[in-house]
Amino acid sequence: MSSGPTMGSAPLIQPQDRIFVAGSRGMAGSAIVRALSAAGYGQILTPPRSELDLLDGAAVSSWFGAQQPSVVVLAAAKVGGIHANATYPADFLLDNLKIQTNVIESAWRSGARRLLFLGSSCIYPKFAEQPIREEALLTGALEPTNEWYAIAKIAGLKLCEALRRQYGFDAISLMPTNLYGPGDNYHPTNSHVLPALIRRFHEASERPEQGLGTQVSCWGTGTPLREFLHVDDLGEACLFALERWSPGPGAIPYLNVGTGLDLSIGELAKAVAEATGFRGEIVWDSSQSDGTPKKQLDVSRLSALGWQARIPLATGLQNTVDLFRQQLQQQLVRL
Image 1 (tube, rainbow, N blue to C red):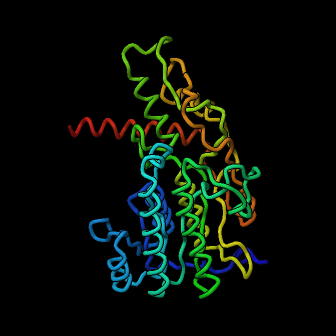
Image 2: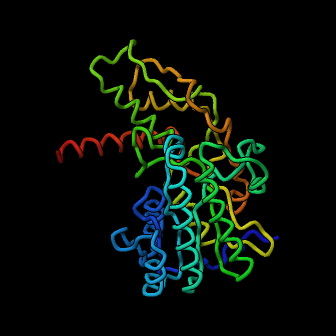
């Protein structure tokens, strides 16, 4: 089975391609736009929500008919952490199913040549064998705390696979691990674990009374293992896949994207505390769910094609904390 074009072959997308990045204002989408722009792609379509509502099927179909993008990257999604998924399960399922179906079907029907769908590592079973290979999909029960989002993402991935199988539509998918970096959501309750920790430890570090008596409470036990990928590495991986990866007949049309390295949430909390300058005590609220005990991706397929993540967690984390603080300061200046 062929996993992609031979190294040195002509890129599968060209500088003159009209490339639509759905979700270009989001964390992943904006990183993909940065990677495409840096590589010399000059016709990148990034309509704001006020111009194109991806939840409106008729509007999406009309837009594709008028703009005729030749390449589509679907990075738009309704996302959130454990609390958000538990609070808004119907929203996560309905909104993501609508966005995916509208964009993927319109891309296929309008004659787009190539599409990349951005999934998530949460599509895999809660107790999948570690590290998780692409073949683990649909082999077990999902993690209940984010199953609504996961089911929507599985549907999008399978729609791409079905269109590829039945109609020869060149749709591929990438499954990234946990992302962090520029453009992240730092909401106190609806964010993912890393931005939530950054906000919590930053605020604690800013307290005048900070010292040995100061505490930061974190959800769970701190024992689950997680893998983290800087979003700019994801942007580079998407560019790499668009230019160089075309699954052969019978090959799995989706790839894991990650670092291949994980650490415990407890270790992550200590790293965030150090990056923010917090000097107090970390306490764990074991009444809150831990989620999946371990989630590490097997990235050997993508590595074999010639791509690897380049930003170490320590470097990326410090840069992310610095950027978060710069943005907070800019907000205060505007006020």
